[in-house]
Length: 187
Image (cartoon, rainbow, N blue to C red; front, side, top):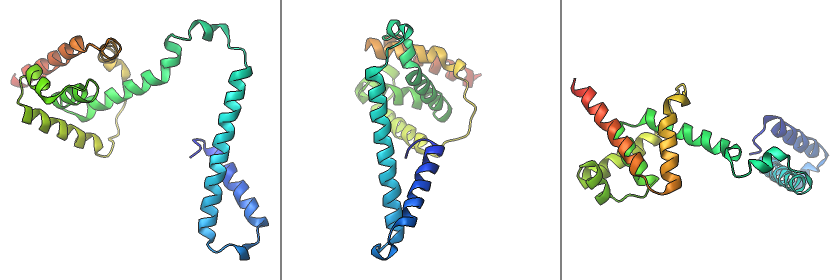
């Protein structure tokens, strides 16, 4: 709950120390009491952290580098890493056509009619590939080594399509990837 092993240990220890001072006769269900106590302490800890963070941000002078980079890439670091990792998972778990349909449907809200026209596939086939992609993504995560450099151009193309709201170049890149894979499978 708190995202830190050390904080979790401290909370459990504090709860245990409080448990030693409580009148045990007044407690009907020990397990429920302890679970609720730990949960409440976790919530209180998280609220305290939020409050401290807010106070710090209100009183702290923002370094000049952050002021100049406020709208820059420095604040997008986590988002970019998460997006890159998500795309790498899509590359790993999905077949190229499944990945293409899944991204176009989920990220750009394309309807099956539009997918049919873009990819020259029947609507029912697109629907089936989308369902298969969702099932494959829900399966237990496979262990794999993540090499983000392999997906850099794909990530950049995806980000550009999202920021402009026009996925044409990204769709063309997906089509090229599909054509390349289909040609290599024929050989």
